Amino acid sequence: MRLLHTLTFETRTFPDGETPPYAILSHTWEEEEVTYADLQDLQGTHATEKKGFEKIRSSCYTANTNGFDYIWIDTCCIDKTSRNADLTEIVGAINSMYRWYGEATICYAYLADIVSRDEMEGSRWFTRGWTLQELIAPRNMVFLNKHWKVLGTKSELRNEISKRTRIPIDILMGKMDLEQTSVAQRMAWAVGRQTSRMEDRAYSLLGIFGVNMPLLYGEGQMAFIRLQEEIMKATEDESLFAWTSRSDIHNRLLAASPDDFNESSDGYSMTPKSPWDVSNRGVRLELPFLATSECGIGLAILNCTRRGKESQSVAIYIRDIFLTFERFQRIDCKRLALVDLSLFRPNQYPSRLMTFQHQRVAGARIYVNVKVNPTYNEGRTLLSYAAEKGNMEIAWLLLSRRDIRADKEDDQGRTPLSYAAEAGHINIVWLLLSRSDVNVSSNDASGSTPLSYAARSGNVPLTKILLSQSEIRRHIKDGNGRTPLSHAAECGRHDLVRMLLDMSDIDADEPCKSGQTPICLAAANVMESLPTPYRW
Image (spheres, rainbow, N blue to C red):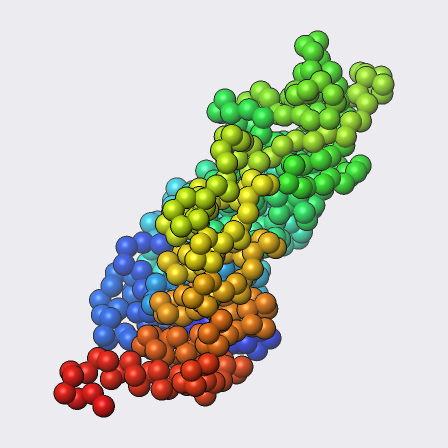
């Protein structure tokens, strides 16, 4: 964890278990925020002249006055913008953020747009996605106005905050565990909250649901679908399906957005009767089915209810697609039903084992008649071109197909991963690495591997990602006997060379098949850059 010293404005990284007591800031991003890169050279980057520097200064002053040597501020404690920005660091930070806020000794919530306590309800702070977990996780929290004056503690303001956010006071005060609330209720807290990037609406909820997942910026609404799939792996709470939508999109079991849970803040789950199974085919679960007068149409009775209406169960409208009582789709998503099962005989709502096709598969059906593995120029596939061009949407849809050959080589022996690595498309590399049928160490006709291409381009974050794969560490040399250090040195990629030299298992004197060491290749690169008369 990287922390900012409250007197020197210097950042320092602490290993897990060795973090000192620290304060943490919760705020909304404004213009000219100070970044990690800015703090590495305060004078050279003119960071002190940025509008956001006053926020850094005041945060540090407040924390230091309260006895803290260190504070965590997201804008400058996560390296997001420098040349050496590491996606693995960003992924790790986002997946750890809820824990960091929970472990902070105190959290300062800076409301930059208000002066008095009476104005709190209208503060922009309550409309942002990330501030939801920043409100719930901390044990001790102080709210500050635009002049850094204390408005009150979370405990003192609990009634106003609960009314504004619909979050129960016991949750705010830490007297009730999040797991004691239903999935639908937690989703309802996020209704109306916005983030700069669409994907962050899902990523900002990871801590609220206690799940982790890779970040794939560019996937759009699919991030929220993936979040719900991760939630399904961690819980059997059927209130996840108790949502409504204003749109006319049908046959979706999973919601498209947290906003679909706007009417679910009073819903809670009862003890589930049977587990569900999530696979490539969709979601398979057992639910009571109450038929209606229309053939194939009925209600799937969820194991959840609403507060004040405990005698009734929430139900969703579904259609038996093939009239086989096997494959179903949700319909009439604009409403839920409340069913009092005591009014029916048990044989009128027998339990059925149902399969609902989820969105990833449904989206790919658009391309059901498209052949995904044909070859074009030089034997290349559609996925190969999508990987090279960085087209995340097309790559995702292609990889959703069961018949896709994700590791198919072209006439040069190159795979989609090879092209994505050379072009530096980190999100697509992550996507391909998540599959078991992709060989991360494959050599093309020239003997190059995906790692070779990443090293030649000097892409530090991408090289780190590839080196984190155990299979690559076992086969770090490419078909020419060359290491990533060899390629980086030859191409003059100084930042990458420094990073590789810091790794304990990288041998700086390892020769390639030609007998040249990295230092020889680096020297040759320098010579090539000299005018002809000065070369050896």
